[in-house]
Image 1 (cartoon, one colour):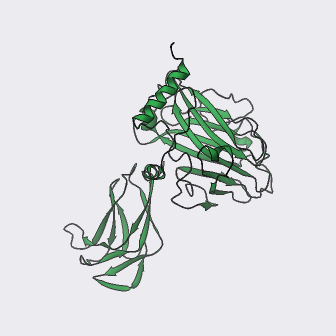
Image 2 (cartoon, one colour):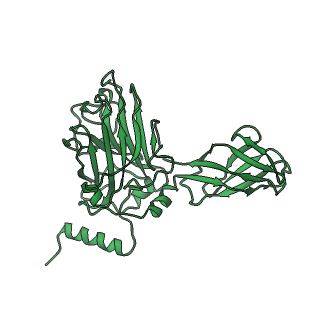
Image 3 (cartoon, helix red, strand yellow):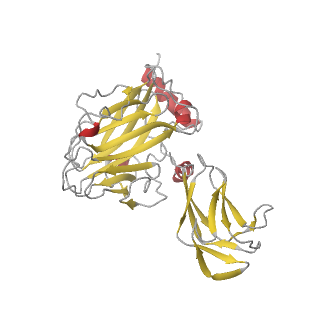
Length: 366
């Protein structure tokens, strides 16, 4: 008896697992890796790797955190131990038209272009699935948005969630003749979750589950329910995010912590220096430097910042733990692309000069 389409796709998934292929286009979908920290009230990539919290118009800043999935819940019994958790601040002024709180995940264009999804064909599909929990019972909107060519937007909704209850959401997204993805390391596809979006960027006439040209005006979502946003200290959690080629959501692809960490380090890496020796910088005879290799080649040349003090042992003698500021004093960091970067001093130190006890944050997130 011939296999139906669903059966074929499930069989394909089993085969891909056997040969070591990776079906999930999302990195860190189980929220295991949090290199930067586990809690922050700041915007941007601050906690769970690859996820960006963006909020504005708030009275009190929300908190993003890596949280534990409670034992006995369905995500826990399915192998999930961590989630991305957002805790609302106290929004005493209510829901403003320009207020917003969203979580962004961005996929490289080449990862979509080479995924096997025939994205210009409406009969070819990708499927997004995830577990979500809200302390407030309401509907939330989320969307897939492209970057290359003429940006296209595909808005979706969770449907009404029961309070404090994990719910699995599955959405199938068809291709469209207007979609374009460059075969490069730039932005390809945004997955954006709206915890709240004010009416400046919403419209009740927005159609769900269909592609349309993205507008910076009012065509992102239908009008958002404001209950979660106006409830002080409300919470929202996400785990098990998976995007795969095909029209069905298959079992989540659990990857080891080490594999997820390596994938995350393409975009962010903490480089810890313990006694790296200085060496003369070329033929200049002026500066000395140490070149430090990344553990993982980066997506692009990162922005390098210093985390804490930088201590040098000067010419073999500990210089009273003299601290040198990155970008100031006599120590800077130079970018050498995706393979290596250098710490450069402004004096002609000998090869016995050592860079000690410093951590550099190397960031090239999309």
